[in-house]
Image (cartoon, rainbow over the protein chains, first blue to last red):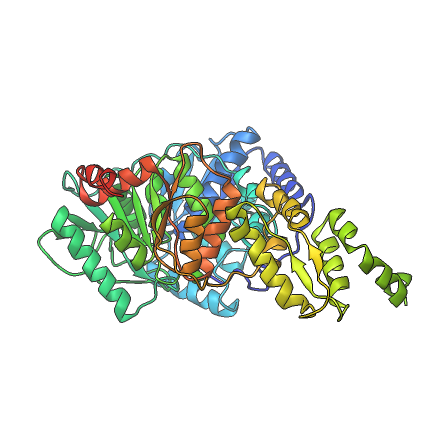
Length: 330
Length: 194
């Protein structure tokens, strides 16, 4: 994601964060605590690494009751928002994945590749209308733009990372109920291609070799669901008796909850750095996140991911194929 | 022309550049002092040394590389001395967690080291940073008492910007990761290692 996108870059305004938060709190009070959080339409990584810990901080620090809070997100992630909302509404219960993907890609094209919800756009409003009807307009809207407006200067290195960390609270994560039978011990695997792990013959070979190596040690449970809602393409792992695909074909409205349930019960999570590699440490699952070109990763995310994993007392290693081989040889 | 731009005033300031650096309260002050030195084609610049090898590799040497390429000091002539202390004092604001990385990053150039490092699993130290700068696979082992978080953040940033990775793990977390990778026996294999 280009965090140097013009709409993302913003001068640091002293006291600006406090002012934004004060405005948000005033809106919540004016709505008598009737709050809509979302709609979250973006990547898993930002949602779990930044948005949810920030919401915990905001609600706890300012004593916001959560009974009248409605969260709108996608993929059945209600368990992620445990303690933050009285109601969860799933986008995919109201919008097809095809429409979602088409609208998302169109929006990215219109905004010059900006994937972040830095403003409330008509697509956000369409999603809210489709999921909640007109009623969302009666309450306060806690839109993801708040996150991006508050912390974009942290991601740009213009503010210390403390500006985010001081506004994040980490609570235990509830394990979603599994939708499928799982082995006693297994490695959860999810590889997909992105800029930091592009679709190259070398990376295809890494995926193949890593999955085969782990399958020799214990069963591998692939998290590939077949649900495609953004530009990321799954890397195709090898087949094998000890390589299981229990989530293939799962309905979109439950796909992230189902993946979370598998991750939470894994002995180890292995996959592309980003997304679920951020999630696994919240469940105390040791995590290996692969990046063949770490220059494509905003280093602030590496910092926050490392520090967050420490909070959950869980090992997280972001590795290149070379560093991974060093671990294997240790 | 403002009085500060007058050649005689600048010549006078140049004679006291050591004092200007010593009193530097901001990166802009340091920039101004170095700019004064760069205007003098008859004097080269002799950058001092940083006694701490970790700070030297992470902060001081990258600053020196940036300053030399940015200001283009005269290659010969009686050298003017630029000590490390005023720069390291400014670095401390970042290291304390209060300062943003950007001013520091604007004034640092991280290049691959010519010397070859062994890399491997090493204690968090200049050795780990040397591994990163050499481009060899390196994993840093945190001491039980921890480390300055901002140093770790910067090392992660440098590693990724050079196209590498630097897992930073406590001994306990590395052991648990190896066990998750290979099974409970991994701890014995690892602790028996070098």
